[in-house]
Image 1 (cartoon, chains in turn blue, brown):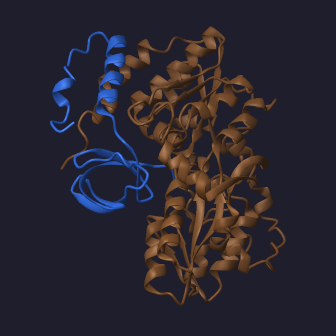
Image 2: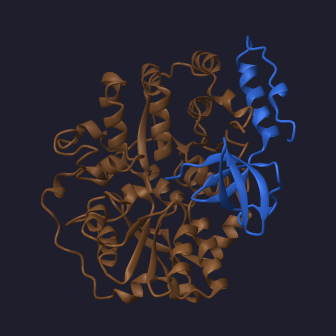
Amino acid sequence: MCLAIPGQVTEIAGPLAKVDFGGIRRDIGVTLVPEVRIGDYVLVHAGFAIQVIDFDEAQRQLELIREIDQFDDTPVREELPSDV
Amino acid sequence: MSNPPLLDRFADPALISTLLSKLLVQPARTLRFMEVCGTHTMAIFQSGLRSPLADKGIELLSGPGCPVCVTAQEDIDLALYIASDPQVTFCTFGDMMRVPGTVHSLSDLKAEGADVRVVYSPLDALTLARQDPRRRVVFLAIGFETTVPAIASTVLEAVQEQLTNFFILPAHKTIPEAMLLLAKHPELQLDGFICPGHVSVIIGEQAYQPVVEQGKAPCVITGFEPLDILRGIGGLVRQVEEQTARVENAYSRVVKPEGNPQAQSMIQLVFAPATVKWRGLGAIEHSGLALKPEYQQFDIRQFYREFSPPPPDPRQSKCRCGEVLLGKIKPPECALFGKGCTPDEPLGACMVSQEGSCQAYYRYRHWEGANAGQ
């Protein structure tokens, strides 16, 4: 029920945005995320974006995990999307 | 367009196995943590982590975070009563369709010709109301704080469009009040909570303060990928070792300390706290949301004041859903589990919902072996 899925915003028109979920596009309500911009990844639940995903924080979290996992040397920064 | 970059790393098998071996020290006694959210219950089964964690002395209990499961029987019976009205187009999330009412389910009513629609979003119900102004279009508003802002926003849209044939059946519940009750429950002896990640997106960190202060239960907010779950459990183990209880946020990529203020203000605009009844937990003060007086016209119950719940079905009285939701028993301890109550023919709500504890245990009973049944 509280499942929420990430998707990328490709267009914004008033209270709705087109959000791309790995190739499937849907109209999604963006009234709960007034800061949203085209290109942002959003977390979507019940047809509404409930938050903009913060990739800097995602990277920081992974770095925290890597501090524990010393032998993982894969650079994570390369995987950041170019538009974030 | 592919999946968001970087997020796949939170399911990296190599990182999972090292985190499992390094982060978690074997605790001196079995620790009992509750994953409050049904989506976490499913994610933990899917990740295969339940058994290796049990081997390390960490017992995970499923909590009441499945909205379908905690909806009180009389609310389900009222929903069925309204849906059987020929004037009504009744819209619901798919999970509610097969939930047994005392006599039948929404799915049964639909088969008998009632206009019951499964929708993805409350906005879909609004579209139906716009398309046919002669029909009463009712949205069954279940869900926790994750879902409530979407409903509030839809109600505000209906106000703006001056739609007079769109209604909701409010049956929302809020999580921290239930967690506080469970934290204080003398029989449960919980060592901490894995807080529901997407509820937390909306309500933020502060909302759990009563659970740590009054309930003295460690809380970690985390996500649904295996690394999120392990980090969350690692944080709980650390708090137990330090003999402290605080709110930690291991899901900062989407959960901000303050939550989502825009969503919170929409909830507060449309709804006010109310005392509501939970299946298994009973009535909990301020754990529900009622429409504020200025939005009462959207409450469908105004037309069905004559409704009185049917007498209980004796078969359902054997269902131990309530104890499962409290974490008092695990699903296989119920005599009906797999024998008379299966996902195909469910007797209780916890077996119906994709995120219900009983369905999760049933689905993964072979994968997780004996541990799932303990």
